[in-house]
Amino acid sequence: MTRKIPETTKEKIRILFKNGISTTRISVQTGVSYSSVYGLTKLKERGYKSAYEYNLQQIKLSGFNSYSEYQKYNAKIKKYRSIREYFNNLAEKRTKREENKVLSHLIVNKLIELNKNQNWLAKQLEVSTGMVSLYVQGKSIPSSDRFDKLVGILFSNTDNKPRSIEELVDGKKLVL
Image 1 (cartoon, one colour):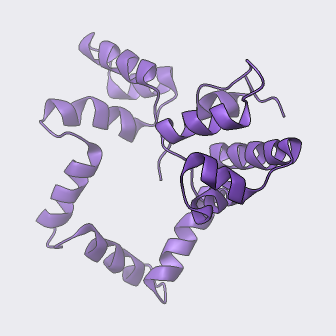
Image 2 (image 1 turned 135 degrees about the horizontal axis):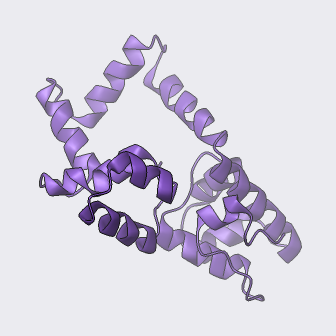
């Protein structure tokens, strides 16, 4: 899963691109990955709605019928015993990302502070307990809409709510 880019940052990227700033420079200025900046600028300019749409087309041009088939191929050439092992490895890599660690830490500490558990949070978010477990383990991060709902639930008694995962990582609003 990728982290969601705030709309204000997306707009800044579009403006910089319209002003002739290179995608590399935009990436450095905004702190957004080059591939994300490329997807929001040059791929849009080429008529793609998203990087996913572009990647799917490239996968099909490479002879694969689906993204799933491509993932199975990747697992095989990378010498994984199964697609499950491949996915577990990808999940493990995600747990090492700073935003995943910070979000996991935040959820755990806020649940303790509120004297609540993952089941309660899952009901509040209207997601499965498995999804909340993935957040707690750092294997996944929520979409921006779900992040907003999560923050609203965990920070209901304070005005010090982080507006994005980036704010959490930057430490601007990390109040535990």
